[in-house]
Image (cartoon, rainbow, N blue to C red; front, top):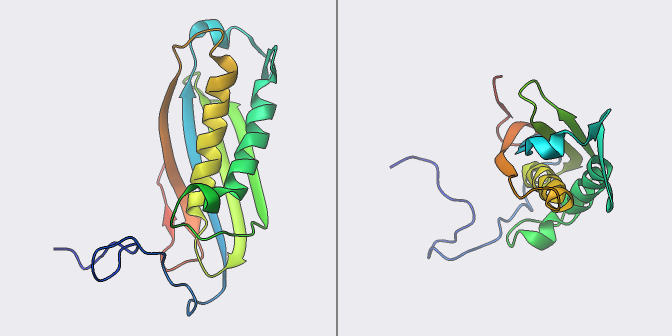
Length: 161
């Protein structure tokens, strides 16, 4: 058995919010990535750095959705603390594999981590792209959402790329 334990369980094994009252305040930053694979028919609609639909510009709408979602993470994930984000940036680009790459970076100065906010922002941006493009094709894959870096808490993390 590992020395690590699940933090969201009390001694009886019941769900429990982590008490952060005694934790130090630190600057915390997290970066998450989601990858969306769009059908060739959809990618043909890419003009410059945007896909335009009857619903509006896909990537610009997804950026806004990602920021809004990151701000609401404490309402969506049951045991997450509600956090006042100091910054949240969502960037969307097409990578070398012709996939849509979403990077969400969130930060704050506080007692608890911010990775769930970054992951939620990237995830909801990916879902927004799906929603806005599904009229063209349902052959859309959200294939990866993962934390790629975090700093400022008990342990820093960086995915080696």
